[in-house]
Length: 422
Image 1 (cartoon, rainbow, N blue to C red):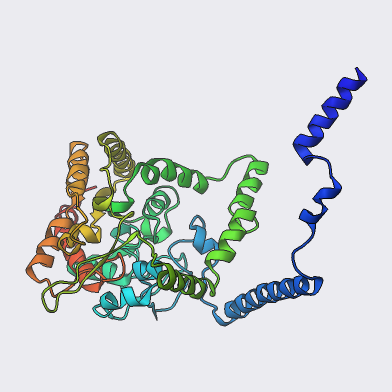
Image 2 (image 1 turned 90 degrees about the vertical axis):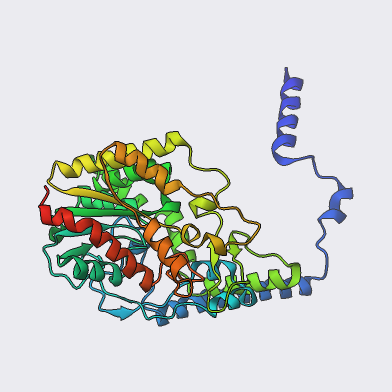
């Protein structure tokens, strides 16, 4: 019995701690190099780490406009910083930043729209419009709606008061908040436009994530669970702290750019999710960059019919909930850039259209009103190819595209307001 126990202990020791030490293994454990060299390498590595830490701290002090954790995670604060005065917001080109290779982005950046962009927010963090509350029309969208041009242009074309409750990257969260925790100025809205880009319309976004966010807006009744939920949603949660320190660091972008440039110059590798559009275009026609993994028409397989029907069911449920409050829901799919400028895609990249048409057909069968933004924007893009409606190195429409979209929406919403539908 004792021998069996000894054998078992030996076996467990080997499993968890490896084979027993043997003098012949000593040379394998001896460090390579001298003690002085090891200390030098350790010192240099430590100084580099310390320099990055100090540099990050100094950069944060010099950059007071950095996003807070509450802004980044999006569940507590709306849109942007509260009470932000009207200020110029520089373009942060998504594709150029992801590519991070100046020589590849330069031909596209040379045609970029440099119109100054302005934004201001109210006490709730919503984009402030020129309209005065209470609002007749509410906008609940993502980053396609989060600049002043959309709300101000729509209010001017409609002759009505328009409030913008959109949240960048959080089109479904903006609607969840409008349903469960609307700001006082938006409770008078009789029409709400719910916008989400084509690439952001999926089952995770509209079903699983939408339900999760609505749950976050209703804190648990149990005080212990509520405390735990607050901890999970705060910057003190380890995962959140790591994300905040990483994504908000002012040194993150320069370091990424340096690494991308070195990788491209030495290995010829780059971020392949950024598609470099055709450059053999007529004079005055801007070449475009696209995102292969975030634009619906560029994904390898279309959204299954069952998923699309489930999304339409959820949108119809939201419409029914709003109708019970006397509010009319109008859904608008924001066209991906490849949908409008498919001719400017690389020649070897196929485009699969028809997504919005499929979604709208499902919504119409459920009695949901929609606004077709694809047809008028594409018609304008083909009629005046030198007048770009989208940024060349970013996914969003530029002020010209925003103004056109606002006019199209006004034409669709005007009969609703005139009829004073509930």
